[in-house]
Image (cartoon, rainbow, N blue to C red; front, side, top):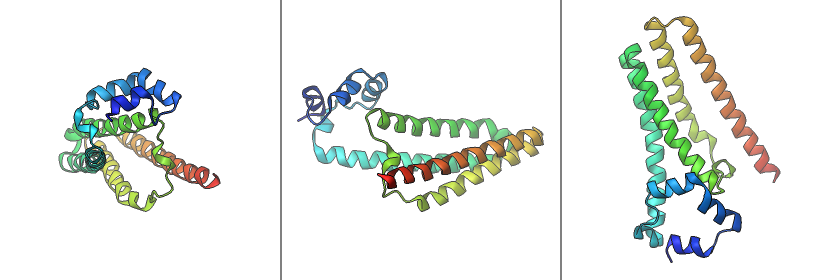
Amino acid sequence: MTRDVAHESGQGLSEDAERIHRDDWLVVAAAKIGDLTSPFYEEERHRDVWNEASAVGLQLTLWLGTALAAAMLWIGGAAALPYGLALVVLVNLVAGFTLLYASRLGVQVDETTSFSSRRMIPYYGLLLLLVAGAIRALVLGGAGASMAYGVGVGASVGFAAAVWGAVRSRRQHAAV
């Protein structure tokens, strides 16, 4: 049975999920962008492999995009700052859209108990390298210490919010 037939017949979907799937502009746009009505998705193994490949591709994009932006800032300095920032924004928009799409279909990725926060430590280190490169580029580029300080404070607040969110999610899930 194809995805469309399953969705049209409502099999496996609650009434709310069916309405969301049909009416949500983001879900409809994403289905068109992802060509989710393709006959390719009719075969279950194809879907499973493609889902895994897409997850690996997203993670690789996050890692390599962040690493490239950090390298741009450390190598290119202030001149590379707009390009590094543009790359970071692009990578985060893609990741954010992915999370938003999953959320609109009722999947909260932070609900899992099998998530190991230890695997995030190297990524946080990479983010720290990126922020340090941005601060260095700002200071050496003559943007002033106040702007570099603002980047440092903003990054610290963002990191604290991420840690708080992870702790809160774990506590909520443990309470259930």
